[in-house]
Structures are given as structure tokens and as C-alpha cells.
Image 1 (tube, rainbow, N blue to C red):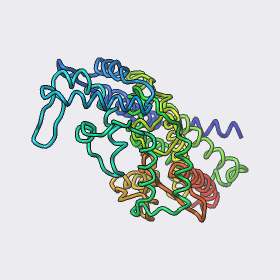
Image 2 (image 1 turned 45 degrees about the vertical axis):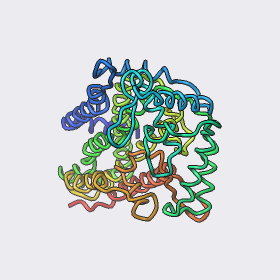
Image 3 (image 1 turned 180 degrees about the horizontal axis):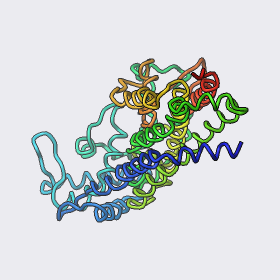
Image 4 (image 1 turned 30 degrees about the vertical axis):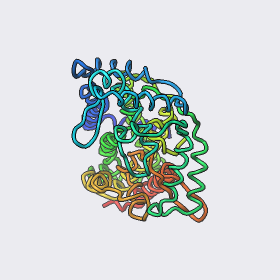
Length: 412
């Protein structure tokens, strides 16, 4: 059996098209995940724009000034310092709609605290609204402190009770239980490398497609070459050979995707740094319910992507076993993978949204801050658990059906 798997694996590797497709895919992945974010990165200081690696180093040094534990006292003091600056007219500009800090007050205080001020202000906004810290923080009453984490809990409760979310009591209980696992107070700091990765996950659809293109001929090419009759009539043609083709395809797909993952993660994390791996994802949005650090969040989404890969390989093999041309296989695979790119969820409830959020392209987008529930009786699944279950089951079923399809093929 090992010999057959090795033979089928090498058969995939020996195709010239395999190396061309994988090389192009890897170069595109390196460019989109690594080089493009670094080249496009820019930040500002009082002297002007700072780009690329110099800009990354400057921003990292500036944000380090705000790193620390977001206690109620820290939040209160930050807001008070901001408000004191607004009390001096020379520090304040006005564009006809809102006031904002200018000059040294901006560069010495607000410039490197913008993300922190946005995080604080958004915690006090009503669910689904964003007033902006320039509008809310200068007039906020902090004479009695801020009670930051109680405010977070109240905002989450309002979100759960919002009639538009149509949540059952079981769903509310599920999300409240998860939120209670989120550790407070939050640690705040620099996390640019991880946020860059998280914002790019859907780009993995390109290497996923490349792997499917390479796998598409596994069964179909035997039909094209007319070797199907000989293989199926052999002693192990309908048993070990079929399993060897499937295992070789899975091994190739996993190995190729691991290489893409390593390339996609290594470059941005090398450029932006791994700082912030242990910080909670809640410092991007306080209502995120998942009790994860940035590293854990990336690992969870990576696991989902591997399950999506397994299911897509299963679908590709299933189609390859039933179609006489690899090109026909791709006429199904490409729409399945990319049509959801042009469809937008209009909420988190309803059968349309719940199906759409499970499709491959949408499954590559984490959606950490969305309270997406799948309920079966009294059992509730969040979107990540549901995606894992769905794609694991789909991979198993499709892989089994692909083998059955080739065995039952009637050779001419």
C-alpha cells in the first residue's frame, strides 16, 4: 500500500503543470501576504509620512508607549488627559462638524493613541453604531471613573437582546457563557503582525484553488488516457489503487498548503514582528465573545482552513471520478469557491446568511465580532464550531463517494 501511495504521489509531482501551478500560487501568496502589506504600510509623524519597514519600526515604538493593562483607572486617566488637552483652544481645530486636536497636542498624545482611544470610545457606543472618539470622549463624564468592563457587559447584553438578532434564550446563554471566559482586564499593546494576518485570510482561496487544479486529473486523467479499463480490471484496481490515489491527493494537498501557510505567515510576522501574540483579540473590539489571544485566533482559523481544504479535495476527487476531463471538474470547483465572494450576508440570522457563511470563501473570513449561532434543539454552535463540523463531515463523505465513483465507473 505504501508503494502505491508513493507512486501516486510522485505521479502528481512529476507533472510539469504541478510545479508551474504551485510556483505561481506560492509567489502570489508571498506577494499578497508579505510583500504587499509591507510595501503599502505607512504611518505619519510631524515631519511627514514614513513607509515600509521604517514606518513599521516607528509605529511599534510609538504604540509601545501605550502598552499595559487596561484597568478602569488606566482608561479613566487616558480620557482625562485627552479632555485636558481640549480645554486649551490652541490645541483644538474645527472643520465645521467636529472638534479635533491639532499641533503638538495631536502629535505628542493622540497620534500614537488613536487605536486605543477608538477602542475605549467604541465600548461606550450603542451596538451597531460608531460615534468616533473625537465626538464622545471630550465630553464624557469620568468624575466617578469609567467602569469599563461593566459597560462592556451591558453592551453585550443589549446586543443579545436586540430583536433584529432573533436570539433564543439558549443562544443568549451560550454567548454569555463564552463571554464569561474572557479574561479581564485586557492587556493592550502592539499587534500589527497578527492583525495583518487576520485581515488576509480570504486570500488563501488562491492556493486552495491551485491545489484543486493539481488534484483535478487524479481520476479524470485515467479516463482521458484510456487507462481506466486496465486499472479497474487489475487485482487491486478497485481497492488499494483507489485508496492510494485518495491518500496521495490528501498528502499532496496538505503538504502544499503547509508550505503556503508557512510562507504566508513568515514574511508579515518577520516584518511586523510577533509582538502581541499573547494579547486578547478583544483589544480590536471589546464585544468579541471568543476567549482567545491573537495566536490562538490565528490557529483556530488555520484549522478551519485545513478542514475547508480537505472538503475541497474531497469535492475535486468526487467530480474527477465522475467527469471525463479535469477541465469539467474546474467548471464546478471555481464557482463553488468564488461565487460566494460576490454575495454579502445581510445579517447573522436566517437560512440565507447561515448557508452563505458556511461556503468556502465566506468560511475563510473569521468574523470574530459577529454573534453567529447555529441551533439544533437546545444545542448551540458558534460559527467556527459549525464550520469545523460541516467541513469535516463534507470531507469524509466526499472522499468516500469519490472512491466509490471510480470503482463503479464503466470503462469503455
